[in-house]
Length: 417
Image (cartoon, rainbow, N blue to C red; front, side, top):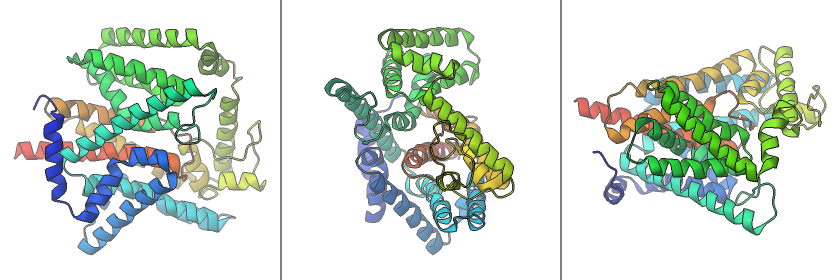
């Protein structure tokens, strides 16, 4: 199969969904539509994530089907969960810390439920990818309308919070990877890729989400050396990328300061806050290296002045880095387990790239690996490790590429039998 026929795949999707129970159809529909549901209500999205995770646990118990527990990244996630509970019990704020520590496990179980139970047919996954793409374009349209109709300096439609950047850099990341990879592989769809990358980069810069925008450079850097070293194309693509940046900053000089000069000169307020919050988290770990101070307790302790705050603006917040927060709040063991979970997920996708696959799956196998690197590189996650809304973005994106990885592996096994 060299081309993806959407009409054919949609008919196959209808046939695939007929084999599911009514309850499974509800769960699958909620997962497929989740990018749009995220725009309506974070509580609804979290409730659906919890429902899918809880349903998976019940099914595993009834059928005594626990093979998914043997997956390496799941093991590390469970060990991190266990150390979170232990840390919470020994903290000064047991109740709130324990609640947040227990609640975190719904995210990895949700991702496991999607990839090892609910989504086994490629047609269902294709519809989910199409829905993701439509939600990304919808956010671009909303950002355009908001910039025209309001004087907002920060985009807040439809989330009522400045979350457009985190959303488009989670939900859209796999499409950015596919598009950049397409330029390196010499596909006939290069013009579409250039157009999509240009539009995406424009809205990425407009969102002000600097870490997300850096993902474009990270994708280009990876594609330069892997899967095949191609310096010439990297220079051309990088030149094109920098040209787009140049045009954007000519018309938006204040953003140039935000993305470059303010960072180099250490005058950007948000960067100074991050540096202070990272220092707070690191010193908390140094002072509590064994079991940390309990999930979410960096922020909790700051609010009641139990630890020193190095944020120059004295905000009582979490460390704004998942790895620092994991070590600060769950100690050396919890931090190590969290890092091993992330590494295990990335390595799992890297192994998938070794498979010999057809045209479409060849793109997917490289893209899901690059996506996983972009999702877990050290500064990619600045939100609360145990939080609700942005964790739903992260783990939804992970559930999508995990399901894609599992289907690719199953397709390869089927073709070899």
